[in-house]
Image 1 (cartoon, rainbow, N blue to C red):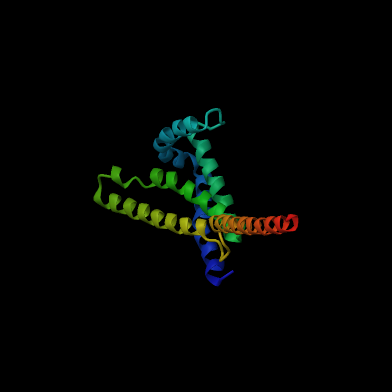
Image 2: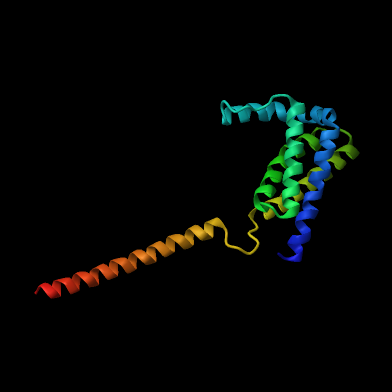
Length: 176
């Protein structure tokens, strides 16, 4: 593991641990901000996964999001399932950003600028998480492995066909 990965993952994770703890400590305040987003996302999730036990209470959703952020951040920081944990954090960051920094709703220029800056900061963090989500630590990813396996199978099939033709020729020669 390179020093960059050794330092970058924990650094990227820290904001999610702090944010998750803050959301658990101030669930009510976060739930007020999250209500607009939750009111739109919950019906979409219920339609996407019918019958799944999707909570509708905004405070519960805030706590679930906070817990997911803390657990995924801890996993990312310690290098356990870094691609999965980065992907979970990226998925949790989108509704968090939409709920927490709706700069388009601000009328005060200073408040709008502050919210836009926070929105852009989260967008930058999202980019880092997407990079961490596809990082393979120098090891080939699944797509490469699948292409390699398919090429190996094709090569083996050609060799088996060639061997079969040679054996058939030998058998024919022995019969005549």
